Amino acid sequence: GTLTHLFIHLATSLQMMQQSVFLSTGDPLVDTTIKIQAVPVPELRGKEVLVTTRALSINPVDYKVLKGSFPNKAKPEEKGWGSDMAGVIAAVGEDVKSFKVGDEVYSDAILHSPFATSVRIPSHKVGIKPSNMTFQEAATVPLAGQTALQALRDHGKMKTGMKVCVFGGSGGVGTFALQIAKALGASYIATTSTNKELCESLGADEVVNYREANVGEVLKGGDFDIVFDTVGGKAHWDAGRKIIKKGGRFVTIIGDGGSMAKTMTRAVWRMFKSNFGGTSYSIFLTKNGSGDLEVLREMVEGGKIKAVVDGEAYKFEDDGIRSMLEKLMTGRTKGKLVMEVAANN
Image (cartoon, rainbow, N blue to C red; front, side, top):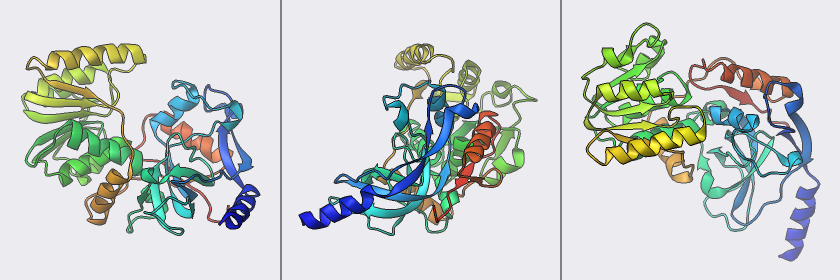
């Protein structure tokens, strides 16, 4: 009743948590931009859960937010950030039916400031963590995994027996795309990467070293049903058109790069042209939700997807966050970077 709620309110309102906030947009590697601060644990509303964070992962979108490439309406002192997380449910809102306290979960918590020791998030954006993954491994999956799944299944209309080419097979999204293409029944998978061994271990049949070869020439006439571009740039669209079969689908999450306006203008033109029998072109933003987190969990538990983690876990402290961003911004990560959030925070 009301008394219990009052008690819960008092108990949670006294709790503090550590949260990484950005005080100004700009180069994330400059000390003054990001700082861990003590802030009150957020109060839960009806359909939300409070998750105690155990691991975090970052994606290119994170440093774009920090750099100010995306508008952010939060007040300066409230600018939390981050995307992927895994942890344990500490409290559930009164309308939450599908989760309980103690559940181990993972989520792409973008817009819910997961770079913190606790995260408040709507329950429909959370999934039960794969039981055969550590928190750190599970934290690598949500954004990149759902992106790869939606690119192939929804935008590429993937069917068993199709030929798939993934541009950027050893990156965060690419490492999942290779495994998911295989899990969805691709008959042949080609990719571009300087890391042949890693890509082959994830299911690639052919790995083209883009530094040494012209991808469009090497794979020309390869009759690919789907070309999934995780790298971006006009050169990838040009190569894609050479290797894709008639009626095939070109799917990208980046477009040509450069300004948003320029990217979208070109994208709209290509989509328009594809109505006249050309290559189908789609550019999309990932949708995060329990449904696809569940699909990915089944793939992981079925042994079809594993996490590819680049290096040791970083520590949840200002220096650790800076090192992690530095590494991500080189654009040379193999798979994903993870951060450990100590259980006793």
